[in-house]
Length: 404
Image (tube, rainbow, N blue to C red; front, side, top):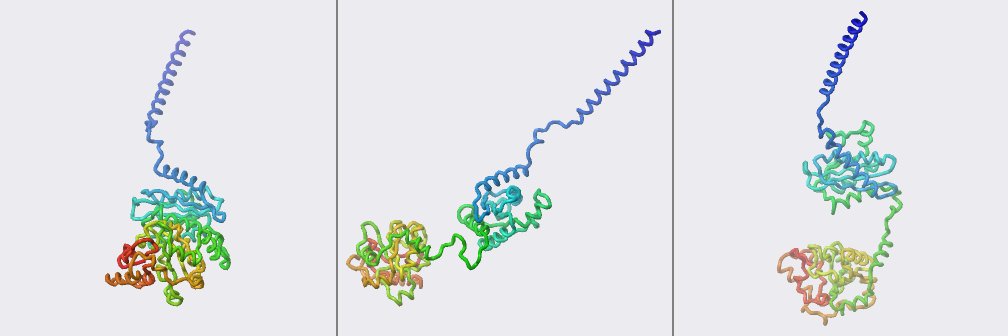
């Protein structure tokens, strides 16, 4: 009897074990069926992730290389145009706001190159204080005028991935504008830097000179430090007997009224001050034909020797390193009792240069008031002083009817 009971318990235990084994295998098969198949693309970053990472890297470089103006970090970030320009700019701006949450800053982020959407590039200013953005907005509109169209963040369809608190802050410390034909390298970039530097400056008393400004007397001293100025007699001798292979010319930048009142030097070239750099820059399309080399010796004379120093410095800045001026100007020339005419015996041309020029212009029928002013005092002696047999057409520029 005992053995039969034992056999029954063993059979029951084996049946129970088989049920448990079957249930366990069923559960494992069910759980394996519920696991999704492996997809190698599942962990790839999205476009938004890549854009945010690029914004972070760009931001860190800009922060590390930032310039300081009155305790404010400033920098300009230029990036190529993208399909999602505005979202990317906001990503960069938001990252800057987070990284420099406790520091004064003003950054500009601009896209350049051919726009992939629309006909405009975009520029964004982000700052730590709304005042900086307001100043930048005003200067941006003033500099770019009809090329600029300022946008409102609230009007944009894209909403950045930041909290409500950050959105309210960004709305006051960011400004985005569409810019047509934005050149991020040559001309527009210096204008953007100027906007940042001026906007970041601490407001000053309007009755006091701004920091880093230079008074006219100091500027005059700095200009003359670059020049080898000539006394009237030295200038006269240099014009009378020019150095070999160094063309020399006397340029009178006085106004027509001053020349009519005080007289003029026959042989000087009359050039309005507001045209001087364009006439004496060899790269300028409006240059005088005689200005075809950078070693041209240009001696500038004005009324009293002040404006001439600044004018000579300006010519040196554009590459005419032999430019200088006459100490004391026309008044000193007159007080030294120097001739009012460069000696004719050195002339290699015949007749009065001014007469030849005026006849040439009259024959073309294109004489203008500016041309008459520029040529009325030119004589053959000046043509000789540059060591060339220059006719009237050689003093004209590439633009018809304009003369030096």
